[in-house]
Image 1: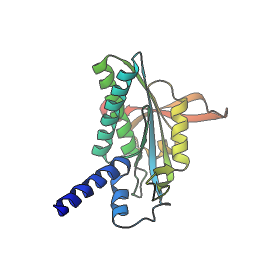
Image 2: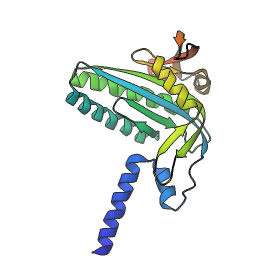
Image 3: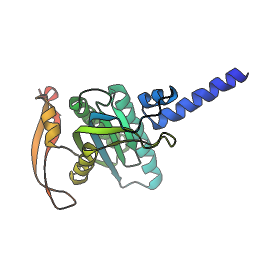
Image 4: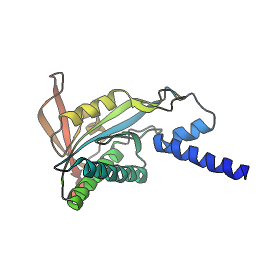
Length: 216
């Protein structure tokens, strides 16, 4: 009975850890490796700000929960890592723990999230808009404190992705020039103009419109 109780407790602990941390971090922690504070990596960070309109608070919570489940399911299927999620903002990263930024994977993920938004919009008959940003480059990914199990991804790409999502128009995915350079010709990109960040500086970015293969 004690062994069964310990096994059940072990599974519960693992489940709780996986709900907050990526699998690779959980594996390292449970193997005794607690030196996870400074992991320099390359990645493409994708942020989605989602805004439902014209619905009450309870319906908004239900819609937000359903969207979170959909977006995390897409991420798990594609191998994209969740960084942080809240009711209206979702941050993911592709290419972590690999030598590549995996910008193509990030673009595929972003477009599949857009499809999920379209499906939820039609299913619930609500006005649901998104604003998204993508940025590729070097990041630091790991735990702020191994005792508190606070996971994060830090560096220029997260800041740039959040800034791009902040200035994007409704239903736009904006990517910076570094990310555009990492993408090959398989994607439809359009240059944007007139973007200004919160400090009043002009931004140059491109819109991700879709897959060239899908267009053909």
